[in-house]
Length: 265
Image 1 (cartoon, rainbow, N blue to C red):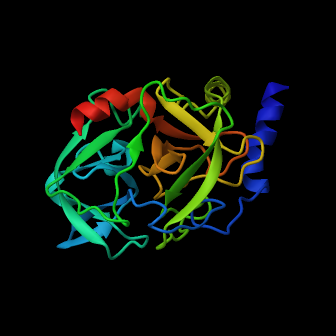
Image 2 (tube, rainbow, N blue to C red):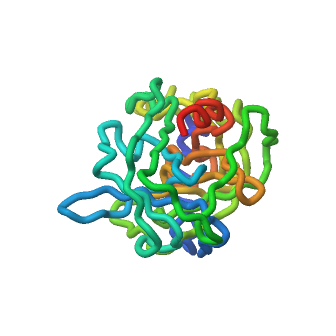
């Protein structure tokens, strides 16, 4: 019976198509004045810088993102951070001087998926560029609390879907950690699904549980999950299927790494 229920629920990923009114799943256009801490890590290739995923400015000289998207072998001299714009172009591009990846991270397990990118020059603060606050280790974030995710990601799961060139955002809810862990453990136990990542103690799960349709997706990874406007509570990490009703999106829980962030930024 459990296998039958599982197959029905996974099938919902195809049968219940997520909303497509935003490039972030189910999202709408967002202003840089609402997300002045929004950062777009760029990588240099062929003599030019190209837009990457997401990141969050947390001090004038430090950005939080995730190594699962930036890459464990990324060189600081090939990276730049674009700030002060809701578009993939414009704003200012500041070179990166150092990339600090959590020592416990490895690409296969994806635990401790967090890094700091130190900027060569301090970002010029304004109403378009302003650091987010980071949630401390004891920051209260109850289940079902509304949080926002933002990024330049694709609008629906699939191959060949274009990414957004304009910043988008959407509201989601905090999902109970034990329930999120259980659902992914049951998925991993099914034949052929052992590749699915587990949910670790340092993860934060979000979505519209048993509803779906609002979520982050490809190219949003590394970007912020924020509470109360500018309090960074998560760094977007991974999901099984974007906008899936049964399996939430999984981020790195900033509260679990608050001390590490302070020490390395």
